[in-house]
Every structure is written in C-alpha cells, then in structure tokens.
Image (tube, rainbow, N blue to C red; front, top):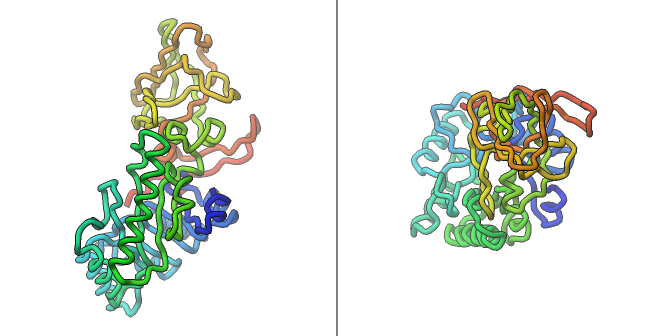
Length: 347
C-alpha cells in the first residue's frame, strides 16, 4: 500500500483502528507513512503514549472532551474533523480562550451518509469558508470516507465511487474559494482506484494492514494477502455434518461479509492451516458467544476433536477489538506476542 500510494504522488496515513497496535503502527511509519489515524481519543492517547507524534481523528469530537483534546494537542501534532458549524465555532472559541489553535479538516459526505456536510447543498462551499475563517482553528482541508464502496457490486462500481469521491472534493474546493492544503480520502476497497485520482493528497486506508474475507470478496485482496487469522480448535463433532469450534461471536464477531458475490457465513475456514485457500465444504453457519457451528458438506475433511483450523474473519477490525494480543508468526514459528494496546478505547 505504501508503494502504491507513494507511486501515485500521495501521502499515506494508515487508520490504526484495524490493528490497534503501536508496534504495527511503527512498522507503517518506518515504511513511509506520514502519520496515523485513530478512531477515538482513547486510541489516540495510547498511540501518543507509545511515541507516535502525528495523529488524525477522522471522527467528530464534541467539545465536552475539551481537556483531553488540548492535552493531546500539546503532546502531538493532532488534527480532527468538523462537520457542524456550531461545533466548529465552539472549538474555535475554546482554542482562542487558551491562546492556541486546533488543526481541523471539514468532513464531506461523499455518499456513505454517515458524517459530513452535504456537498450538494448550495451552502456547502460557504460552510467550508466559514470554518476556515474561524480564529481558533487552523484549517487544513477536506476529508471523506467512501464507506459505500463496501457495497460495490463490481470492481467497476468501486472505481466509479473512487472517481466520484475525488470529483466531489475537487468541486467543493472550487466552490469554497479557500486554499486546501490537504484532500484526504480513506477506504481500503477503493484505495486501488483512489491512488490515481487527481487532487487527492492523502489516503487513509486501515484494513489493508490485515485484510479479511470481505476485502477478498471485494477484489481488494487475495487469500494469501490476509495476515490476520483466528486459530480455532474443534471441541465437538455432534454429527457427521457438524463441527463445533471454540471461536464464537466473542472472537469472530457477528459481522457478515460483503463482496461482489454472496458470501454467507461468519468466516472462511482453512481446514489445513497451511492451505493457500479455504475449504468451501466447511461453512460457519452460526455463532453463539463461545461456539462456531460449522456445516461440513460431503467430502469435507474429518476434523476430529482437538484438531486446529484457521479462520479468515469477515471483518478483521472488530476481531482486533475482541482480543488482548495477537501472535506474530512466520510459518509455524512464533516470532512475537503483540499486545492490542488500544482495544476497548471507545471514548
């Protein structure tokens, strides 16, 4: 990812909510990333404690967090998003009162309809200009997240989303009449298309560090690109066509996979832990908290109790937040235990 983004003349700022590990963040920074993103203030505080010095929160922070935000901004180069003019004015007033300025970007809704100003609103350009004029804010530019790329039906659809995202941002810069140092986009499914879009200065993919079954389904990764797997043990064989594993919803999550074709179930099972692809005869049909109920079709491996399988989860980011540590392995050799230092930091 670093090479692709650099070759495209853009900066890479990985979103660390996927791995939540300062150790992996350091690998990304050493490879050339210009900083990191965190999902919440609590995550950012963990990465700051670990020595990361440039942190972006592409998340709307409420001024109730005033003390934590200013404390963090005293320690690192901090930036975050605003998408509500009133909230932006509140942050500006707080910064003026403290004799400082806060780095902000305006979040733009490019089609996912979660956070962000509506670029189709005739007043959108004026909103950007108004935020840029606030005395307590240092306006950096625009930021977006094409999360609807996860719903793309084909690679061509994903590319069209990336193209449209870049166009919307360029048009909004023109409408605002304000200089934007940064135009930041971020989503792993569209990253391979965003690298070539004009006007974009920064990309913020996160999932690419691990990938998962959804990214394979969306054509963003192959099975051997998936770094995060769950090592699970067979604990019961109640019937010839059923296998019970010790990896339930507290491990794999109830998130469903998305892709260009249907991807039912809760993970891809590698019956041979060294196999290059999952065994399609094994389907994780149901999860309870501690158990995965796997349907074994005719011809599936025997998998006696006690045997081990690997599972590529549907969504690796959530799996990270469910475990205390991940094990870095090289083949069968355990290299290092990596604490998931920022797990559970939800505020």
